[in-house]
Image 1: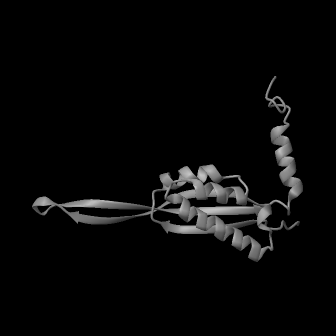
Image 2: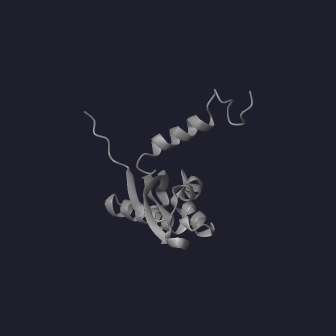
Image 3: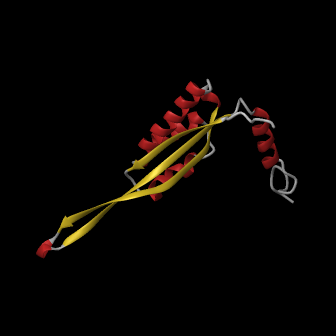
Length: 143
């Protein structure tokens, strides 16, 4: 039995007070990018979700450097997902003794980083197969 070395490190943020739909808008921009490029993108985007995602990416990189001794220049964002959390429900008093529900959605964000220097061969073959695949028409996509 061959034991595979764990190369992916996670950071998890739970019960973040924002809609999952708004957080996904930012997460889709950073998935698959390098760590340094991700930090630049998150600093320049004008959305409120960027701050909490920035903290999670920074935390995942700190986990990777502490647990595996990885260099931050070799990290890529391999997994980024947003799930809906619980909804905080409150009642707001309205006219004539009625009440109006206030719903505050929360979300759970998971950021996974991978060190490409540990499995350089797998990463390069994955890029080589996707770019130079014969079935897709080669590099330029012409048939």
